Image 1: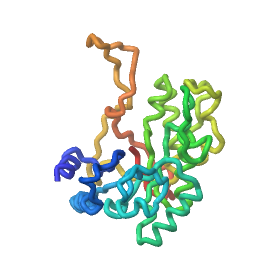
Image 2 (image 1 turned 90 degrees about the vertical axis):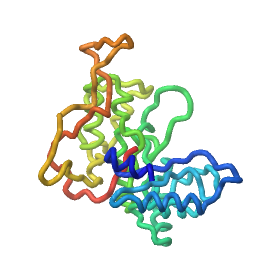
Image 3 (image 1 turned 30 degrees about the horizontal axis):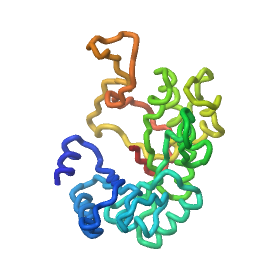
Image 4 (image 1 turned 180 degrees about the vertical axis):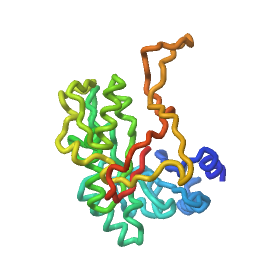
Length: 273
């Protein structure tokens, strides 16, 4: 298929299939959708296809936040599923039990974690992810740790949050290191949240993301390349002129930065979107 060719050409792992609109009744066929997912999955030698927990097997939009009868047929067809982000410890345990009852590998159930949920700027309803009140952001690793404890996988939504939420380059880089490796946050950390010290939550240094994620060597046994670029680019005005002292986040320009393995005992897989 063209989707397979695109993935192979650009070298990424596979596809996240996110359909958040129902099909017209005359065009709906669960069997056709299952067949599409199975064909796409079989076309990858070692890639993956992940179904997102939005469209159900009954052609309705109904976020389950766990593995249920409403989404398991599509999860099986794809090979894995990313659930919505409002799960609990209890629903995660139910997902594992339901997966085992139906012959589905629990590690292929990736419970979503909304990294943006910890931010509080602006009016309206706050986003919620596990653990409630402090999940996401610097608390992302707490959700990953809980899922590893249960025996499920994790799926991170919007991991670029440190670069999108914090105004300074130094703060963005420090927060990203804190999230992933457990480094302490800067004492002078600034952002637009309405609650002071919102990101200095308990246990943020003891449960970083990488503590419970597989790490894989970059490159191959005999070849490795990096240009050491970080996730910032020089700001260019609409007129085309560059401002020397102004940098903007540009994750597409980030290269692999060599470093030692931090957590040799890490067990679970991690997916980011």
